[in-house]
Image 1 (cartoon, rainbow, N blue to C red):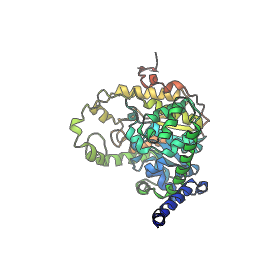
Image 2: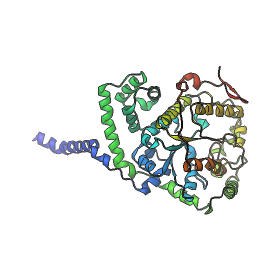
Image 3: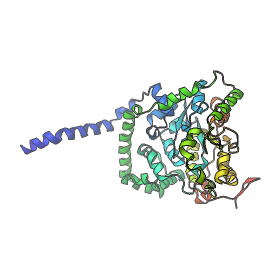
Image 4: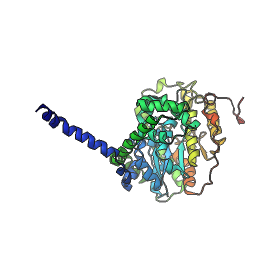
Length: 427
């Protein structure tokens, strides 16, 4: 009698759990790859962590006419001249798929790339390099954890081959709390970082986890995507003229920028100024004195991204933005240090064959170029478009990359010997 009651109570629970396990382990879900154009459109501008962590929606969209735009919080600054708005308004042959949000940096992007490597092979991408990533501590572990994807990690582990890139990626992941969140995967990471293959048991476990996570992505990914930014893009596009003419658009950008920066003398968007800075501005004078972007583990993390792009033969346009010049002077951020950062990051790029660079680092003093202290706006987006549009719509020669493993070394992270006139030099 007791056994019968126990079965009546726990039997359905056990059966449901078994059914769910069968569902999430079933290989049949791999066949359900249809993602509607509406879902793709919403996902491309959603900036949702769920989209960043997943795989299916990104893959389907990038197999269509979407191009990966890697970056961070700048993508959330929607105005009529934002890359997504210009591409939609003027019916470009590409649409940006915005990858990244506040706090996402190179290490996050390396793992994001694992979910779309097939879509990056021999194709194009845009990568926005924020100088503010390159702080002495590098990527914030809490921000990394927020965007961490076990699916992307298991995808990478299943394909790793013990290269320097793989060993460094495992080492960096173990430095983050997320890397130890699963003990078996953490043990596998430790072996990879040491130059060893994961054990047979670890491989089997990773495969088991990967199948479950992949099926979860197949089942749920397309149903949890907000459409707020897609509507915002349509609304911003209505302010643009029907015909793309750069000089006219530049005048319009100046007009809109002027209208939206009336509350301060720094050329900062009124909303950002009133909500974020107005109450604190008096004590922010010279608060960035001594701040440096020349020593950071971010340089090694950035090399992971370059290494993956090279492996995928991806043609990449790198964008180096400026800092709002008036704000930079007020807060005491060194202009010389910013020039040296520009030299250092360009050396890391060009010495390895990454020569498509839109260097805007000297444009921070142009009126209405920036929307706030560090993010492009109005004229900034428009000037950026002069590099993005031809890069994505015209033929680009096959790149010849040659990865230099010394950029993974701590010595490069800490290197800051430069000559302002002649560029980079080393001991």
